[in-house]
Image (cartoon, rainbow, N blue to C red; front, side, top):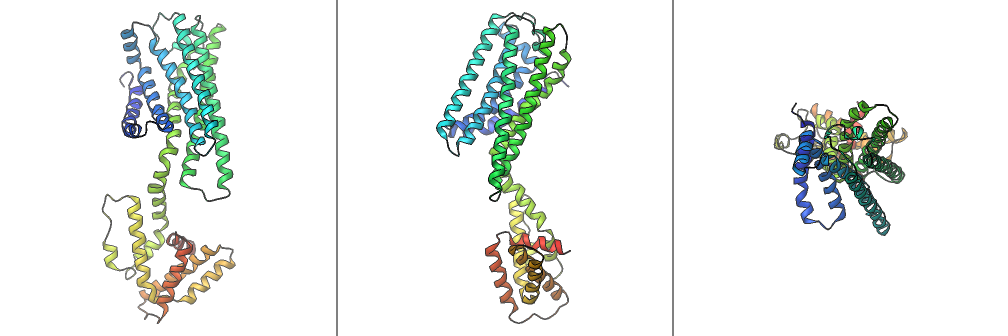
Length: 398
């Protein structure tokens, strides 16, 4: 693999994400959340580019300053850690306490600017004549001013990781308490996943930063733990990508859950009822032939299947027996099922018996069709996922 490829590939991926997000930034550039999300893509992209050994040499030669690229990367990663905490504050502030959010954001930004200014001053006061694209931290660990710069950067990195972990974990607990009292939404699920990723990434930053500090301390004590620093460098890049992913999941997760994941779950849940609908003589052949196009998304496929099944039920209603539905519903209730689950079990038993009756070519039962349709309409008013509930009842009945 060419030198620097493992840095340029993730930078290219982030660059594509930047291009995709640029229109939204131009439309809503006054929104601090949008700006922060854009910064959280831009900063690691720049960090990956500047960390690649070929770029390190090119930047140093162009500026005629040895190891300038190392300073830039340290400043970028400090800003990235700050932006992560700023976005978390903006997210929590959207639910209220905007004044408190603004104060916290100002504290983070002031601290970040102070640390970056100190890094620049310490780098200017120190001496780094030998270009070290891979082991800058440990090579200059005992150099005057540079050692202070490295410790300041790593302490900031560890503190930011610890703060991210604490904030995200407390938020996860808050979500758990809220969703215990109501139905969990796609926003809750995606936010919880994103926060869990951030907790792992924050802990990783604390561990990696502590290990690098240990390697620097070993240099001060006359030892050499350079291998520890070099072996952790790739994992720190992965940790940075995890933070980006954890921050983007809550932003893009709800649409994916609503338009992709939940329809796919619904399609899978409808399989028992769909197989019953597909039996010879079960559903109208015209509806079964109108398949969605090959490029249809999960939402379209789910809508097609539910429409086809519903059409089949209406055609089958003349063979339904309301006594079968009522008996199955009563058995389910006696077994401890909730009211909507018992109703779905009754309908499942009624339509399964009707399908078997029509397969045996038994004559329709007079006046039963209207009763079956009325029961179906009444249940649909109570359960918006009625067809899925019926399908699950069929699967449970075997």
